[in-house]
Image 1: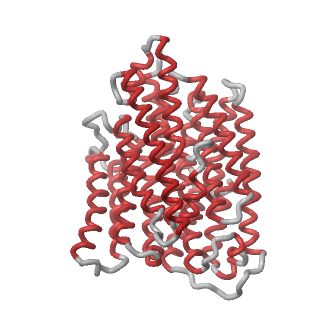
Image 2: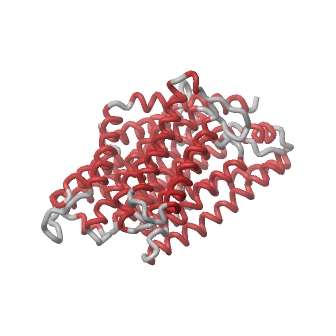
Image 3: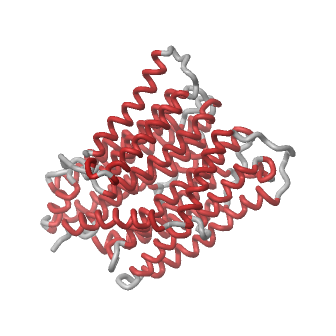
Length: 496
């Protein structure tokens, strides 16, 4: 089965079906119908992916060089679609407050399609196309609250920087094609290995531009400036999609590009990623500690988490027995995706009942909205890496990878120490929110009604965090198998 093609048909078909149903009904269809179509489409897509893994009759095949049907694409597709499913389910109730459910859910499905294609893309031009298919709907979703000036401002800022990053990526791709005569990643890397020395500066410039272009979506310092404003201005469910899903699609591309290309630029780029990792997690955690609005705090926390994932990319070439760095990248992409989505969906649930966006509005939330407060607590503790939640295990893998890399490079142990110190530091602002919810007195007394739909999504997401923390082996083994697949691809094009 050529999985990306089938997923394109399902997701694009679902997005168009929503618009057709809205047009045929003259806008009189039930408000929840687009949400149910969106959720059903995503669940069908996830089922199709699992079908390729359990049934030999539907095993993965590839008939072209545009996509690479491998476990890396499968892993990241499941991650981004799982987050999209949580967002779609939570949006059924939330979108009632802002209206235009058909457009919202159609844009959500097109975003999911772009992310899935990015997960499988093995050609730089296909990456650009999928990148835009993912990005353009999110610009509109970020500004979906048209009557909110903050939402409009966030959308404009995001669009300007997003357009700039696309221009940077296109320039990088043009340089690669100039040097290699191909935009296929593996073919281009093989050609770059045989470059005359005088062309090396152009090759290094091309890779630098790829880092900058991908860095915007990955929220890597110094390309992170749009994140806090966008996450604060966007509807919380959209912020969940941006922080927990689109970022993971960008990391999928980074893994596929740089892990294949790193053998050619080994020392320079691993050291650069290590420096970026330390800067990203440190700045993100320090900035998060100073925030007064929870969406901005979670935005900076998301930046810090990107720094942890970068540790895995930095140490990937130095694995000894197993590709533990890549395993950490994939494992933490999954755990962070679920935890971050849970946190923002909890913010959406609170925003339906409390208009104030400040942290003060979370005082006494444990009494006023107990289920929402409990699930938010689980998400925050998971983000902090508290055992036995799943965030602890994925961080442990990343830091272990850095320690192992210390046998090959001098900065490996220091990188692990920086990650551990940042994790301990982050517990301060996560615990601060939990303390507000359970120990501080609320500004207004009285129990608040919790949305049944949002509560169900939060409970399901919290259970995933807990269960995959108690039983992390299946996710770890899946990540290991996917890492071995991409490692073999890197070995195939490594310079002799």
